[in-house]
Image (cartoon, rainbow, N blue to C red; front, side, top):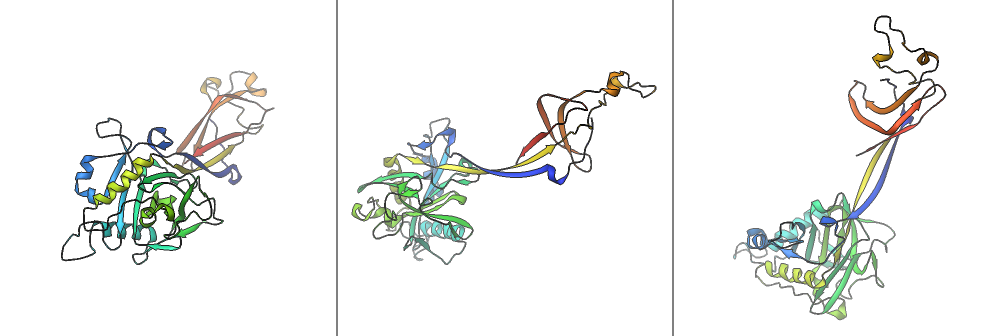
Length: 336
């Protein structure tokens, strides 16, 4: 085994963006949706519903995303205290998402040119995507009494990226594959269909836009604003997902690679340190051919730090012949 100190120019760092399917089991498009009766009946059912890719009776079902309804005024759900208006599961949900997304508890959501006070949230399960969602891959079909709409983000229609807080923000429009069908893709009276936040795995849908008439660009989604169970609005939105039966989105991950170039030059690494080649009594090379015309076979590259700790090992696919007439360049790739 021989050692050589690596220089600064022997290291090169590269970053590549890799996209892949978001849903479990390699499914590109979700076409069936299931809820868990146990979760819906629990106290969490007042705040959100987990959407699975199979029924509870299945042995392989897993949560793909969750849906929630938020209302700034607390409408659409039963107040925590009948004597205190405006404080309910829907207002709590609105406040949580406002703080998380806007990073400011005093701002509202501007859906295009319309400031909304209510939304439906789709929160992609963290296990479904690696680093972020991939802009331009969203295709969501929703269907209700006034018809169907296909929603996407407008990432291909904007020249620059907008940020809300520290999060990238794209408006959700009627269209496909990151581009509006025509014009802005907004409704005629309620602005955009919502926000797409790829870095937090979040889709906020403008409830007012979805509840509008077909003439205005809505689908007639039933949104109750009475003091009734919040589960009603969640079930109405869930039914719109089931009727649309098509939800496609991809994930994105940046893979950083550290390339280390190991350069055995002609005068280096030509002698073996295997004890069988050296006389134990005199320390001389036993075989004369290995004195003037040595030949070695490189099989492994080990990377050590300054304290002589082995950090990584790279195995060559086949032994590399090395002698005084040959120089080699071995590229070691470390992904992290």
